[in-house]
Length: 105
Image (tube, helix red, strand yellow):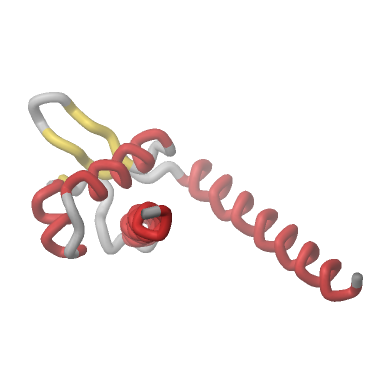
């Protein structure tokens, strides 16, 4: 059963990453409404997995949930975009340095 849980975790991460990239690439536009049913059908995943990914996106500020109205992609904030790009650049550089260091050792 641990393999099944790991597979579900990977699928949740894949759904989250796909949605996040679609938001950052503007495939999903700012202000666009998101439907759990539609997303689960498009991604061939359960609503629970989509809901988990959406929750993580809410925590990170990519989307907002309006009670009785639905879920929408937040509007663009250029400063936030700069911060995200900077953070990813720093993380990628740190990962590359760590990989190179491990190969040297």
